[in-house]
Length: 505
Ligand SMILES: Cc1cc2nc3c(=O)[nH]c(=O)nc-3n(C[C@H](O)[C@H](O)[C@H](O)COP(=O)(O)OP(=O)(O)OC[C@H]3O[C@@H](n4cnc5c(N)ncnc54)[C@H](O)[C@@H]3O)c2cc1C
Image (cartoon, rainbow, N blue to C red; front, side, top):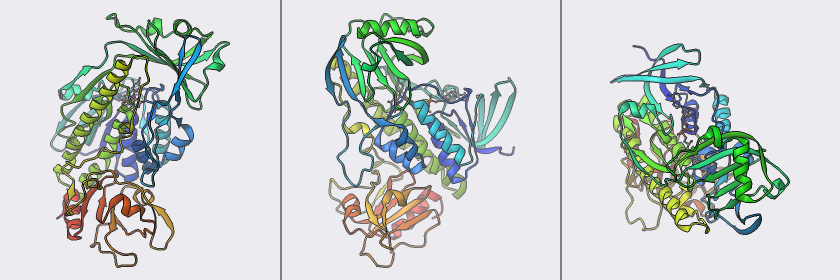
């Protein structure tokens, strides 16, 4: 049976879109199908971590993301109708040439999705909305998916690989029978909504603050004017009485307005509810992220407590890890082991991040009405693949606290061969590998061997020593997803590593 496309992606949330953008810029045929009529309408995952900003920089959407987003607002706590304390929820990274985006940004998820979709279209890609993947079978050569369109018609599509980016309730994961194990992190239900807030006290709910009433007996409420739009995000907690929140009755403008007025004691009303959802915080992770020719990515593979803003961020990093590996297998005959490393690398990261978000959630609960804290560990800048199957640290006597193979490849301002200023992130930007040569003196002949065109060699001039300070000495092969795959002093190791990720020795 002939192939209709190389990659079928189910779901056009942040995960599916990031993968589609990465594949589009690589010129890999793919098809994205999305069950809903248009993109996701809610604010939901608003916290974009520094590591995700780096990914967005690489994919060419950073200007739109920075322009549309705002800093993490200061928390303003209230006691009834009076302001109480102000505190910072998050910690920024120390300003350094190695970290161009030291602080998280806030942007409603529907805007992030819109920006990603616009980028996909700019690259010539698109999403088939109102198109649901209703079933699939797989064989050694590919996957056959059944699609149902809005008018009820069905279509069969044949692809080499299927990526399930179909969210926490992933039907693909269920069909594969992959166990999704975890626990409820908090049994108390939470309602989240985007609303138009009005009334005489509306002006007191100013932007730049996350307004919180933490000590209400009936449950907390938080109001946050969203970045550059007219809507305000309402988050309201409820006692656990065993019942689920009924959105039809509790997320109406009247009911939600009453709740906000009662808990804030401010003269506030709600004229419109644009989007509402309810959840109980839980964490769960798929036992494996790959089954034959099918991959699970994003929420389909792991769901988090929203505390600490890790879900969307971990999800898009799954896609970023997978895109270049799919190209290597499709175009360069890379071995199955390369594509299998997606599972090994990302299950480890997901397990760590799930531990972190659960810990933050429990600390918030334990802290009751006190100050919540999100430290630098939420930035995802220190996550990496040191123990991963694609990591080769071959230098001797590397100091304990130095960068090692497997770590995130840091940025550094330096100069190119002509002396023009350039940042390493400018050099890394794009779908290629970069061989960063920090072995010798400026002006020496490059020590790199003949390399394929998907590996670019860069020997920076480093008058201020920022590159050396960040990396140390040696040859560093930087993966397209911004991690150091190989660190060595011996140029012959580079050829061997190229063989590892491309299949040819
Ligand atoms: C209250 C709340 C707050 C949050 N805050 C944060 C935060 O601050 N930071 C953060 O990082 N994360 C946060 N998250 C998590 C974040 O929203 C998710 O991790 C993120 O949406 C995952 O993206 P995804 O693309 O994997 O899945 P989704 O966004 O769920 O997208 C899946 C898509 O697949 C489509 N689909 C499903 N089945 C099919 C099918 N069979 N065929 C075709 N299409 C299908 C769906 O319609 C959907 O559009 C929060 C979550 C909640 C609930």
